[in-house]
Image 1 (tube, one colour):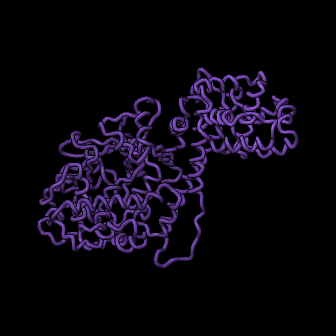
Image 2: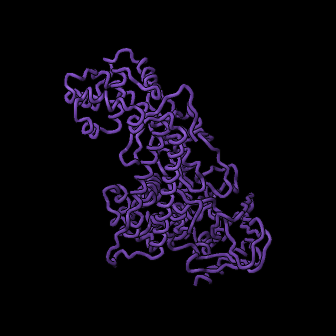
Length: 601
């Protein structure tokens, strides 16, 4: 049956002027679907399709003559057009158009294996992943696109789609089980009530998502978002490694394979470097050991932060998903450029997004720069050592939390006749999930190595509680006992490393007894306090105040350091330390502030 459909499609293409290279055959494979095999060695094979076989917005006036739409909405109505051609058998006015494209329509897949239409148990296989957590929002966005078009157009009989409208309006209070039973099943089985129902629109959306080409290949003056369907050309499967060229004119679209296609090999197209998350979401399959795969980390920023970075910090790259979404030979600008002049608040409304990829360590550096900026204190520059270390710790914590969310074993349940799990879908989910875990572990390992390198290279500018104990024995042997009397060891054991440093600095300032090796601490503190002439104006700090009270109670009359001095030291430490979040005891480290600093690599 599939072979007959393919042959009818090829015969149809031949009648309308499709040029297929000699030496190839199209066949059906149970796993890959339709594929193109070279029966001989071919030099630079080319496949061309005339413009009148291309499904694009120019056809809307023929199939939907009573609809008026904005150019920005043309893709939405193209989806309605495809759904009408597939499901509307009553409108005789489009019989000619439907008949013309029938061989192509017959070869379109009944189901695009996108997780959007998986049953609830299958979707549960993706829990914890970016894809799994985004499915409901993605479906809602598609539904909103359909709902908006329906409400803005008078040609649709809304009584026939009342169920779809009501489900959308109550979407956030409706379970995925109800949505699956009421809508998604109709998409899966291709049994929509009417051609303009949401289930029909969703099927059409998935066809465009998995098969559409950018129209600007044919028409450089069209909007970048305009798409089209290319019968027969879209039968070619994807391989990111193959080199191809897409050529367009007013009369035809041409695909050209660059190089020699060997006998027995598959003739591929190249849709660009797509990771398994994008492949699974849009096409329903994954590739083993896909070097293009990545893990997305989205960060929400305040508009003030975005504005400051865009105007004052050009070296910090603020990226969105659009910066990564390309076709095979797109050339997109880098950095924070905004070629379309869009409002920054609109561009970054969903936050900034970084893709972590094993073959691009630069992705981590971009994130490190942003996290250092977000963790700088007061007038501190994000390129300073303390900001860089805090940024690394914060990024490491974010990635570790993401890993913990994903790295949860799926609990096997008893077979469920209502929602059986498809074997191939399960394999795809497992492959995708393992890959996400592998990428995150790689990134965390890289950050751990980078932290180790920074600690080694900057050890003379770093001070820990252990170093104080080693290089300032007078503090432990004389100064602390003089203040506390006895039980010094018990008291020290109760302190965090941050509190220990606060105690040491406070006593050293009071006794004027900094050892020469760490005289820079006194110098840094004096520079800090010089901008605060009145210590009494330093705001109350619950942690500092509690620390002062406990110390006063412990030492009695021997302790005469004021609460204002303690608050000042705590404030100083807040801006000059970082905490190693991944260390066993979450060690706090004091960082020397230099007049000049260099960016860490």
